[in-house]
Figure 1 (cartoon, rainbow, N blue to C red):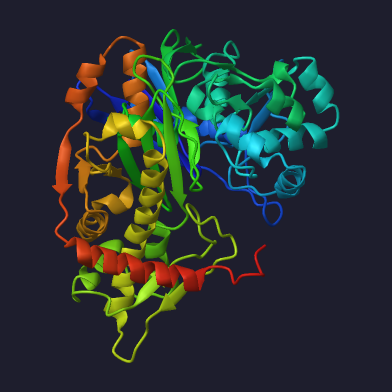
Figure 2 (figure 1 turned 90 degrees about the horizontal axis):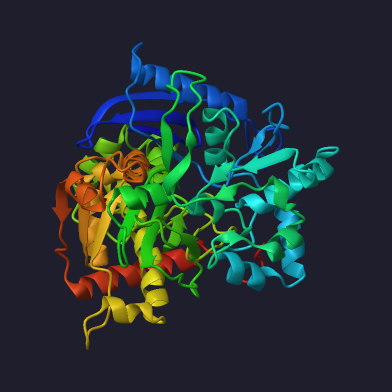
Length: 506
């Protein structure tokens, strides 16, 4: 199985054998374009070229014998291209791009935010693809008319790659990517006519939505990928990681620690509407049926360690941060709130700024380093608390809790760079009061794409996939509940100090 993992700054390719082992890998970065403040763009044609390059790296000059291709991708990034020529109208608008903030603000003033959340499970924000697509159609001469006539194709990055892999034969996507467009009815898992009217999006430009493990097309052989190989697995990066971690049924929970931290909890076959500032999104189901998840995003995770290393220069590497943190038993009351770009879920406070509180004459480098690492785990704990509150107010809790017991998340599966930190994972287990399970294969996003592809092609069954997943280590909580409550209360006091002063919110 060939897994194409197309990320925000680069493209990976991993080759998995029938036992789920990585046999070869390739990587190629690509350019980031910042034409104006708040705008972030990618060259979609360059992204396609990086995919060809990384496949050449894993093939090593030999013809690949592939059973299937799987794709996982950066979500929300928006591409529009001409169906006849296959050329993009312009650069792709990246998920980080904020140019449509005025349009989102205008829709909020019209009182449409509640409708967006009820229909799509999302908040009204430039993050998602719908307003990006509307912007392209409005600002490209003749594009709106061409889209109505069916001459243009819209897609997130998965759709763009499939189009190219199949030689323009397949214009398709999957529910996990479609659910991030602000155009999909979350319950129907079909394009919603009301949302299309609201944003001015013509139906002919939208791709067909197919199950994440299913047939999306057949490769055309127009590059290093041989012809005739079925593309049978597609998912957005975070949902691919959820699937790769084996969280395929109600209650499964994973945390990916990257630049930020992404938490997803599988909520089964029905969506859970959040009242605590989380997103409701589609997930992957092994049988191809409807599946949903709650999602919360922490803006700063690994980036906090980068700040320690590159900006304040308190450490020279992430392993050194661990060693320094462990030289003191606690932070001596110091808290670092790394709100460098505001606070994400569950606070959603763009005006918040990073702070260090609790400094005394006795505070030293080790206390600040330890407090910075602990801030990652505290931030994750805040999202977990919001998830637990959302689940407890729904009927889903009855399916999770034994009679007479209060439901609580008791196990988390982790991946991403920071999950290799023993200090971070142990403190995470302590502050959550839950087991932290770290897999032997850290490439869970790529593995998720490969597993979906193998499942869709009939190479593996769901039972096979369960056997392929191996555990590296389990971290168990060692902290007393009273101490946990004390630490969380102090953290929340520090967060309050970092948040926007009342009356000055943006």
